[in-house]
Length: 580
Image (cartoon, rainbow, N blue to C red; front, side, top):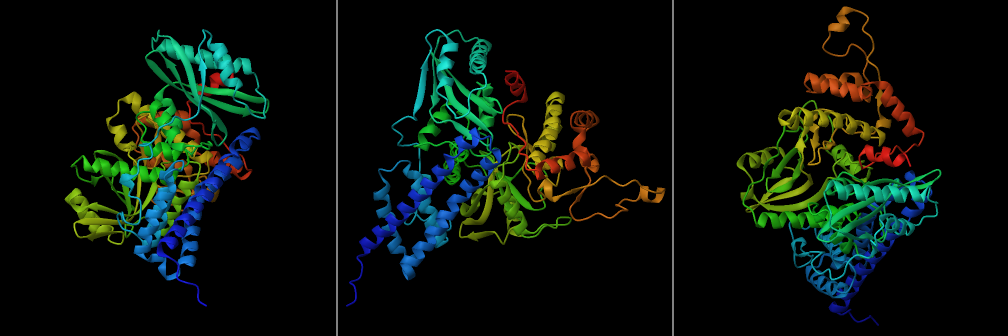
């Protein structure tokens, strides 16, 4: 006898449960990778931390794709039955109502339905609409913290605090670390003229890890005031020590930057931690906080929600981004929203020879790479829909003529099959034109440091023109144009051969053989539009980056497996703490 047909509600419930369980497995594996971080720190295994970071980033797509494959196999021809998926959507919502961080699970469901149906814009009947997802809306509890009350001695308070931070590695000199933290807190309070009583310190219970460093994240609470508090820890051959203490929003914001690798911290409820972090960094977008905690997909959802809400309350038009027009990307902004939108052009004008797939691969490399505070975390979006009336006529004309393979008109809307969204910065070339001389020199020196930092993490920008770098609100120089980016270890760094006669010397083009991967660092300075004072400052502090010997030396260190640290806090803090 044939089995009776399955009840539609039962079938929908089974599919919903299948997705719930798939997310549970994803989340368990995510946390399992995250929990390796303390062991990596104890073993001073920075290379293993980098591998864990890549594995965890790739986990989401792996589970989404596998779940889609399983659903197609189990549902057969019904895999794209919209009536069934409406029922699955309803059943899924009922099942996850009581779960921890249910918005994460909703985002996972929407990733599946959008890919399965190739949804353009939004489909509220078969997905959870991003504008309706607010992971902070229903938070009724606080992140788990340890509280240390000030009984009159900061030394005793921080002795208790650091005493609760336990690793298998011993402390190198706990008393000196305690004295250092207490002294920095006293100095910060004194510098602010704060005479009100400091009552307590609250720290999030799990330690935060990022490649080679561990961080205690918290806040100093007094009568009528709070200060953010981050304590950076380093594990040396002789034990753990406090490497830096940060008590300003700006310093801490750089640690939680959109240009850095994601933290590994085992949180039971991520949204509770975001509420705490938002309190000590009020200017940091919620989307970036979710992202830097490793929940990149939720961060994307939050950024889209922030954008949609901004558009609801503004009337400004999308327009070309400030700066020179790129040969590979059409870049535009919405002035009221602090991001840049980037669309790959249909064709790349001379002298660009890179292919579209190569551009996609370079952005993918940056996504999984240690960004070291010098590369923008560009978020990739597909099939977004925006009202055509919100675009300036000049931008609309360029999109029609230059991106017709990616951007389509559908009624009154523009549909973007693919785009990158990243934080907006001031292009370095524009910044130098308007900045006061001292600020301009600081930016030039940080440009040199940016190139060094990228080199230490095996990244060669390829195109060092100033227009490809931006300046953040903290004055940090960041690289954001990836179409010529490559790995340092893939390059051949050469000295320019000496000319043998006057004729060779006068030629406009190279008179010697230049291979495909050849790079001549001493020629970089010819293409950088610095004034004389700026050029001298760069040469004084960073002249060696204009030598092939520097780059070959970095190559050798990388090929020998060395992980060169690029710290997210100011070097003067390293020197102070390093004297312990």
